[in-house]
Length: 610
View 1 (cartoon, rainbow, N blue to C red):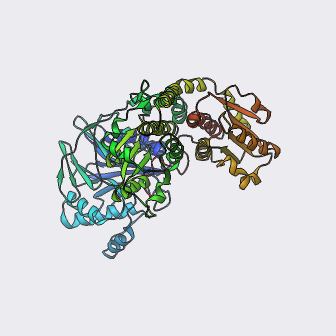
View 2: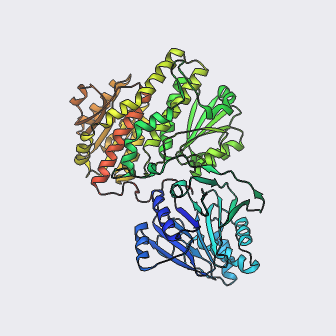
View 3: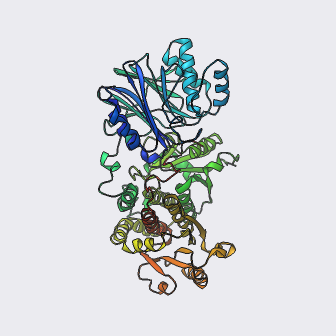
């Protein structure tokens, strides 16, 4: 959500900043802007629309500045327009700022500033912060002090980069609740919301924690708290390759990431399986092994797609380890004063590791004494750093806003946790070996599925004009149905709902007629006959049935208008395989409708504000 890039060095800043903004487009935004410090004054270009629109404005200008900041805005305060776009300046024109987050007390600050004679051009809380910093700079004549004092006064969240025209050798970055890192290059520094905007220039990065700031000059940097206490920060190395954030010949990042899932599923279990013993080794959980062994209840908290994987994880862990599991929306967990018991284990799932609600949830759980672990994809993310232990997905950067490969990797990791906890308790070595073998077979099965997807293209063509879909499944496949519906909603803008198949007769069956496509996950398992009964109910009402079925199941063609086959696996791993054709169906429908698949409207990849 929103994107920040800042540069100070020897290169032409405009080029670096524009490249960085393009790398951050996947985060979701509605406007973009750049501020360059050129010959002692700011040159500002900002525009509603895509980064390409902003880039075209540079055709009429030539800048040689080596210092600047840039932003892609996702509107919170104030509608998307040119005036509300970032960067924002103070009244003197000496301060330029870009900001991610929400300043909660901006109204009172604005009233005080207006009373003192300051003016405002936009409707944004971010301009209030810029003007506030400017007022303090006017008072003290010290750029760094003005930023620090302002940040000590504001309530809410921020990731900011700030420039001062009187100090052309300085860029200040600070964060609270909104991710911010900076890359350390050869005589240059690049600040960004995430590493994708930095890796082209350097692999060495410093992660800022909450209430920390970096004062960056051409000859070095200092890091400190906003209370002015100097701190020493570790320089980390970006682990992924530049190629992993390129499309690699695919039309969209989402399609590329769907087709990467054989590899990402394999990578998520690489080095973690002990097939001869039927066990799992998770080195990231070593610090909390005793707590895991003694856990009486597990609470999994997440948002969106991660919440759906958590539901699958609930079924898996309860089945294998016989530990009660509750799944909570992080956005609800953080506000409802949850009951946390001494031996509770809280698992937070977030692809980005920066989801604001999930981060707040783990802080609430930690404060109440729970053991908190994280399942995240982004190395060095805030959740990874604030949990007591955790597991990385190793799925590589996920650029498409609609999560695909992270979902399947999350289920794999939750399966690993289930096997590990089960083997600590009553799961036999024989059963453990069987589970491990089946996990190891999944990448080959995914590869085989992806060799021929032509039938999904045909189904997409048949149903691209439908306004509503139902997705139904039972047991482990109910959460998979929820995820299938979410994918279609996110990128095609078609209304879709996921339900437990047995709940259909308790309401949704009223919607079914000859115009309603119904996607059933109807694989061969112990409740197959029950699902067939639900299919017959839909068929009797002339609903259009699209079945995701087990290879070799010819009988299902009696009821289903379309059948998508997936390889046979054990029930708890079916959601991993079933997710892929549902992702492809959503993708192809969206493409046929002309949607912006990688950057769907109103959505952000990482939701870092409430």
